[in-house]
Length: 492
Image 1 (tube, rainbow, N blue to C red):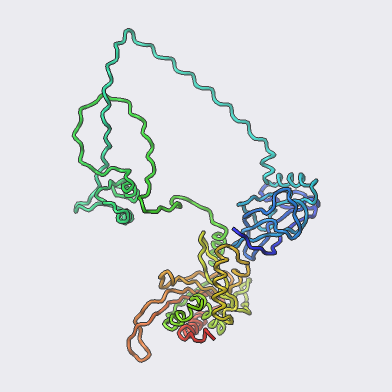
Image 2 (cartoon, rainbow, N blue to C red):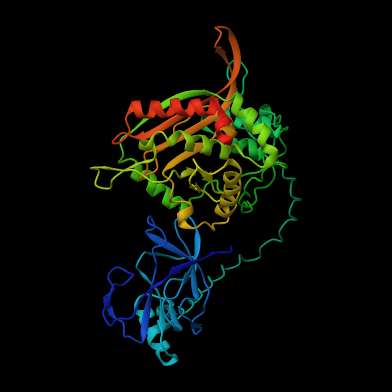
């Protein structure tokens, strides 16, 4: 993954003072001037911790002031972090793939080669890799003495020669229990098992259920599809009794393989920690719970907007740009909708620019909101080019913080998935977010009192009730409806 080249600086401490340990319970250390401490920088206003993606220097390498030292994954982007000082990378405390809080030490830079050993000792005291190498490896435990072999039993006197062993009888697969059926003859199976059987072309009448009271489960269907379980069969005639023999130890059953042509998610039955981006989203959603929100819905006819889109699409204009532009034009008349409540909750901050953020799902989980700045005054063609560039760099984690955290009004569009209506959660620090559903043909009353069919889109706005009231939201939606239903002004 290529990281963004940005002038972020790693914090460096060179004063001879006590610094906090990164592990609870460790005593503070005094760092001499010859060994400088590199801290995890704050790469965005919402960043509380960072993950080390890769070290661009190895221990012992020379480091120049302003040279990229490490790649750090912040909330929503990977960034090169530059060194504040010149010297030699003496020790690394936080390894690649590990996390550290903002302000925590992540490495030591030594002024001279003679100070590198001192840097390593400091890293070892803080719990860095040097600590592990300094500790002696535990001696391997001595192997336990083998238990004495049991004394052989005394042979019986004049034992007769053993009779020839009978040929082993052929082993037959035990038939699986017959499927449980209701009194009306229907086989009892879970709904998912029925759907899975349909997908895998498995006859439920041939599947033996292992669930409660013989109910067929999805696992039973998968096993049958993989041929691991014999179909119910009529009992075979009883064979002549054979001499009893010691049973062979049963082999553990192999897990059922998915049927050919089916895909089973590797995530089934696992637990995975949040990615950095998912953790940031979770924190923001928890913050949003502190805001008193309300919602207003509106229906908008999109026939003219759709026609304009088809006309401009060959020129590179996207529907995203059209929606952002429409919101920008409407927001210009309603400054409360792109304002924010002050941090103390006692005032309103009115923003100078209209910056529309749009939610984008990330392939590895979480979402990010690239920002189309000055959406009201930027032309459609430039907005479309800007959006294509933002999405491309967002998915490769190359956005600058200002490109995803400067939005003051957000759009979440699920219309392309066939979603008709939904509610969006308000991002902290903003006044409103617009949830956009898909357009669908709807029977409506026309202006001349007749009945006609038009494409109608449902939008829901979620707003901060501390600064936006119901009438404010309704008036904004009226303006947005007018802009979308008369979209010629979007091309001006």
